Image 1 (cartoon, one colour):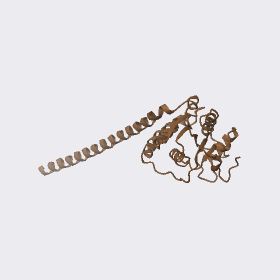
Image 2: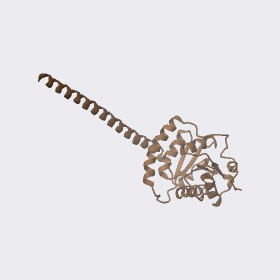
Image 3: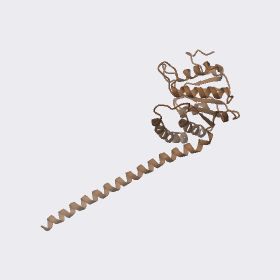
Image 4: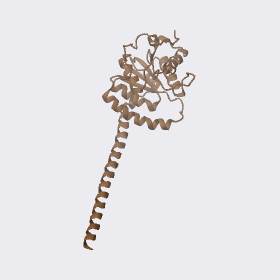
Length: 246
């Protein structure tokens, strides 16, 4: 009978030990989770807070001196090659800023990584049809991400001071990256309307800010680089063989 009691006590001790170990592991995971969440929202606040003052209304942006170009970020096009609603509004704002004299050149940067998908050609077409001289419109065919667009704006197009056009939720990250890469950057929002699915984009953008906070620290090279095409030159040098601009 005494031996049986000892066994039961040993089993209880083993069980209690396992429970304590599990509790410690659970608490550690919980703490790491809270730290991770805190880091995400902390970095998000840093990115937004550090560049908030550089988001300007169009009239104030037009008063900036020596801006090299108005950089319009690509977004998406329809199957017929026309700009999506968000891209249409970015282009509309970019054209407005050019007409206000905010900068002498436009830089259209977006995805042209597939033969049958060409954001930048659609973007330049919009601006040319709005009356802007083709030579004043540059196309970056390898702007596959916000980071790559900013990196190439500096390294390929030699821009030092830029005015970025996109929706406000996206501006914070774009300006932050540009500044981290050594450019002087300002932004103008292109929110002319409400956009379907914006809540999801806002959530994803928080994570994207965290990702590009790290990317901006390490500054990896983009998918493509190449020879310099200075933004103060002729934008038609960036036309591809399928372009029809004069």
